[in-house]
Image 1 (cartoon, rainbow, N blue to C red):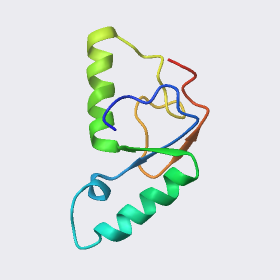
Image 2 (spheres, rainbow, N blue to C red):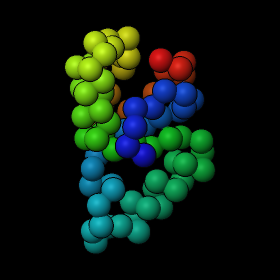
Image 3 (cartoon, one colour):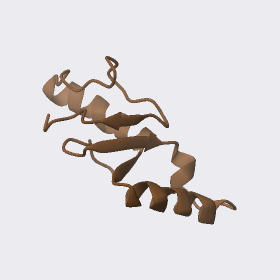
Image 4 (cartoon, rainbow, N blue to C red):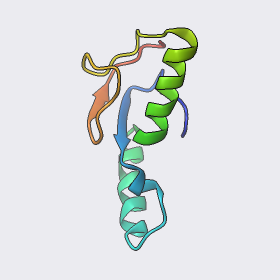
Length: 85
């Protein structure tokens, strides 16, 4: 998923290494599968931050905040944050 999350109820941003092929691919895939089965949407932090920066530059959209910061933190679960922004 490479878009800015807007309507998801539970969201977590993971390090890009969780999305690459590696020796630990089966572990990463299992972790992502378990999170998704619990209703948590998973995003790559690197691509999401790029999309947010692009959105801010294009539309001056500063309404989207993550615990009062403009960008999300890695491995932090955000709940009911977006409400269709």
